[in-house]
Length: 245
Image (tube, rainbow, N blue to C red; front, top):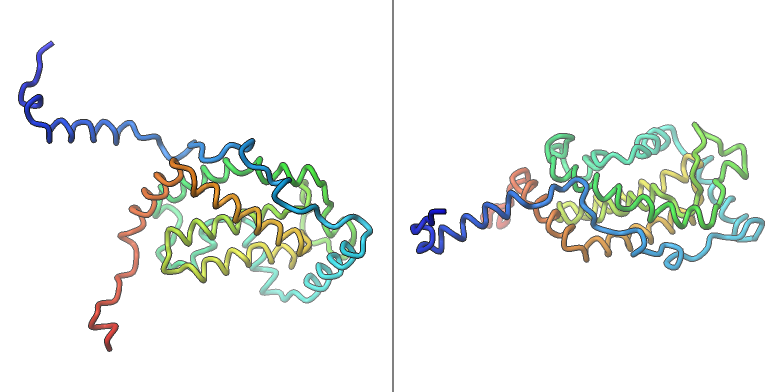
């Protein structure tokens, strides 16, 4: 084996070579493990839902019924669209440049998060087995029934978590992004799929998942890659002269 003495005596060249190897060896975003389900206890985090037949449950159902009956056609159309949980439903809050296919690393990050948190959401649902509002009031039936349980709302959990991550990536649009994340949860009450308490529990769970994600070195690494990816698409920052005017 011959030694390349030029590299041996050129530390910068060696460092560059190792950097190239590190980049090539870096894990692909898709399939990464940011969280392990056994590391997260949604049952301990959340309070139990109202007991069936209790005054609190009846009040919760009454609220769900009032919101459902007061919905407008525009609100129903929005809620049905939001139910897809597509990241690109956030486009009105972020900007026209936020389109499918424009940010592959961002899409891969969220696809990985989705697989990481499915069991975390399902565990408390399957523990409490709360039935959905339309199971207790047939007048709240709209569209197809859903096979999972009601508490906490998975849509509210995911919408909250999506919004918090997107707010990290697009901090200049933080407030409209977070507001849209809240809307995703509330829209589930509008179409009879959840009680208000389901939505609030989902927000708590979504915030907790986000905090755990932010502790993950792998997530932080991939989040940094996504921020670098979206940076060229950001609107130019106003100059000092423009601000002065």
